[in-house]
Amino acid sequence: MTKLARQIASDAAPGWRLALQRLHLHVPTGNFATGLDLVDAIGALAEAADHHPDIDLRYGSVHIALSSHDAGGITDRDIALAGQIDALLAERGLTPSHEDVTVVEIAIDALDIDAIRPFWAAVLGWPDDADELVDPATSGPTVWFQQMDQPQPQRNRIHLDVTVAHDEADARVAAALAAGGTLVNGNRAPAFWILADPEGNEACICTWQNRE
Image (cartoon, rainbow, N blue to C red; front, side, top):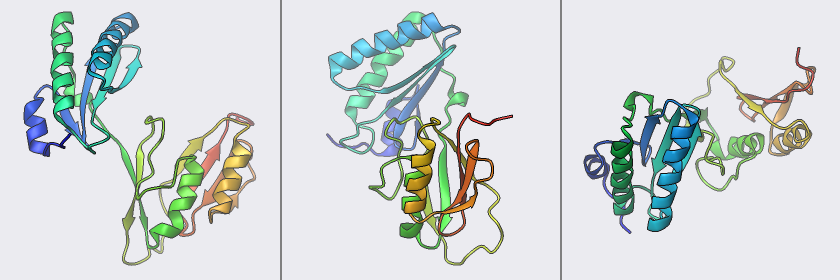
């Protein structure tokens, strides 16, 4: 299966929007029952095609993302399934909302990417097996690392809050420290621990406990 060029993929599925190597469709449904019916119908098409999209069902909306993981992008299989899903929307009188298609990535600037990437994999609890860190559940944003050519002397002005189950927090903190991180402040634990990677970029491991 051959990956399609971006322009070709976009032109072949005009009702969808291309973002980060995937075709996206955000569909307002107005209520949960309508969304569930749409998801069930898409599921039947996906099973018949043996090609399965990522689907996010919320009260009032459904978000669908299509790509061929084995090809690393959009293929004819995605275009075909996109067309079938378009037909389902037409049958149900549903109109996609393109302005609601937003895909977020997090970029962390670094002088030594190999030194800090294990810390962020440990903090997030995601595999550290590629240049990017990708949530195995596909619900979180991708984290990638941008090479810097000189240090930034000022304190970083953005950090990540990573909320975990209360009984997972100690292990997550320990994994981050073992991966080269430092404990900046643990005075508010178990509400949160402030950690930093080897270059000083910060993250908080958070739980529901001891919150005011």
